[in-house]
Image 1 (tube, rainbow, N blue to C red):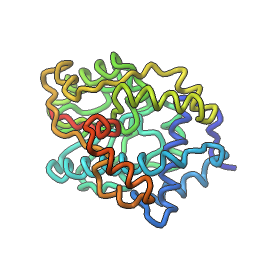
Image 2 (tube, helix red, strand yellow):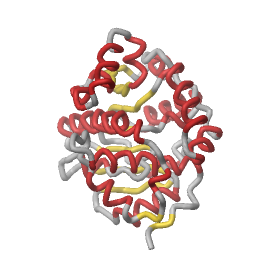
Image 3 (tube, one colour):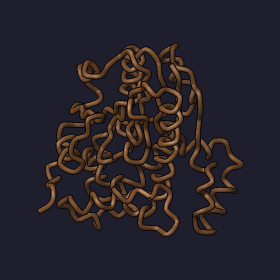
Length: 277
């Protein structure tokens, strides 16, 4: 019998959705992430993944993860004494994809139920430290050292937070760590509303329930977090629509995306934001 995840809350269930997306990407002849471990992991979980229905999200999710992976690689290459903090890590194993110097420590942060499932799936590693906590809390940061350069990532996280919760989280992170970078994806207000409408009308039942619990609004101006905390400086705004992986798509989708590149607003709908502090 596989690992039982039927007790996951709707928001926790989204970790299964993104895991399955990476597994499906790994099965494609033109894979973005080549995350074959994701495909192995779903075989260890007691869940009918065929009911998830996320084919349309596979490419975008994989490219977004690759952007975050590349940002992380660059940071740890420049800071071999760094720590990586993966917020809302779900059932991803970014460390498996990102080769890090042996001196880098990795902190995976998520709900206790997710961390328990991760431990069963991935086991223990001397440089990987599970942190069982809701990222909206405060005390969990006390378990992570402050003095080392920190690469903080939140792939798929902020779509489940309100703007107030995003602001509070960023302020806590900047106050806790001496220096580092923060990278997360954001859809903007218009795309966020569209994603919600699609999910509520066509998504699987658990996604609909998760969206009902979620206060996400999003923001359009990538400089807004700089006004939340003066230490934050926008370093990069990377769009999935501008990556070489667009050429891996079928002709029709490829053509639509390349035509949409003429619109700055369209480009910003699928972006990863990276800030220095």
